[in-house]
Length: 242
Image (cartoon, rainbow, N blue to C red; front, side, top):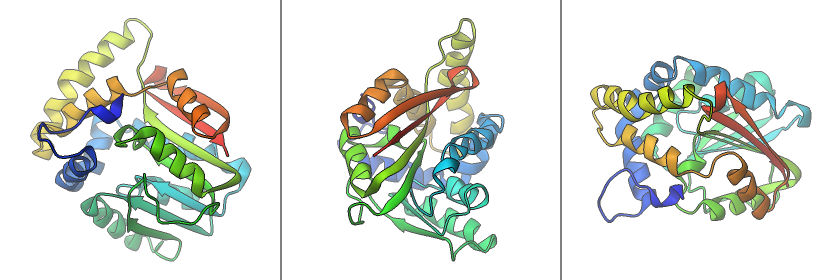
């Protein structure tokens, strides 16, 4: 399981290591996302957000919000009244806050430091919850999933966008070579954190993607759960309701 994979070798718990890693790479995060995904991450986020349109959510929680890419895009595509973004990395939140203020979205988007497994909100608060490339980093995946379910309103929708593993030959082999060898090298040279993009590869390999993650959703209180692979399975959109 992905919760057993950590960025660094020291005995510190996964949450502390994840916070440290993202604090280290925060200044380079957006640039590397665009570079290493060939800008496909932009279209992936848009397709994932569009899954929420039918529910017309007005109060949205964006967990593991990072630099607030998803939160900002949701203001354009969903017209919500309020988005709260939480993340354990203060440096990522600082970058996100600068982007929000530059776009004059601070009346709609509020960012705060927070733990996905101990959310500081009352039960049944949000119409929708989003997590983009974040559940893989949970220390306890099922605990985090149940905690999001707790603060989601009955009938509210969860949308998870996460890396997955292609299965089609020879795309799978080419992709895995790139993901294991080229991506960590570029990340090391650019972000100055040699472990961060090695961890990305290792955590994706350990994550229960596809049908396995749908089973996790089934077991943590979500209904009508679906998985939609994108770009031959490089990543997947998971949706479910409370």
